[in-house]
Image (cartoon, rainbow, N blue to C red; front, side, top):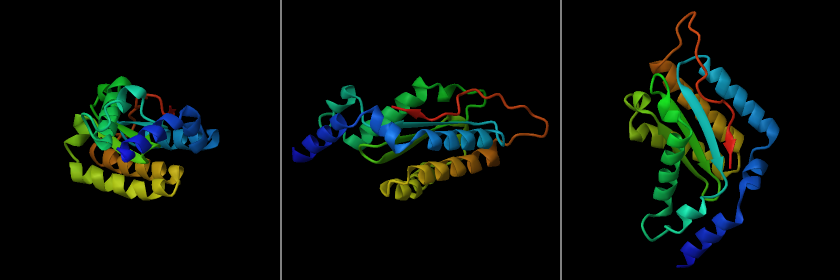
Length: 176
């Protein structure tokens, strides 16, 4: 019961200003440029979503229907859909979701890319990124995530010479 109360308080305490504090404007500009540079090398789309805390609609379910980790995954999948990451031309969009209250990371990849990477591959990537996030090195962790996701996209969905890639989704990270 104490753990549930601590979790609830942590999520109720944080808001979008905490996400903006963790990723200030200059960092957002650098991350946006990295996503744009990455997308020039492949046909995939990368979105970054940083959320300070789970919405209240998720919090009431903590410990009742799902553990926090499952709720965070559920939230990431919902955002993947809401942001239209699943609706790219080549079915190769990727959402990198960072949840600050739990210092949790989720990567959700569309079916085109998921056919080439296993759940173990994604989990290993999350573990590597998590080492930076645990130390508060959000830019380093997100830069690493962009690089690792880009490597997969370049390997399986490279741009061809003379090809103009449509930028189907915004490159800027979303902070909430």
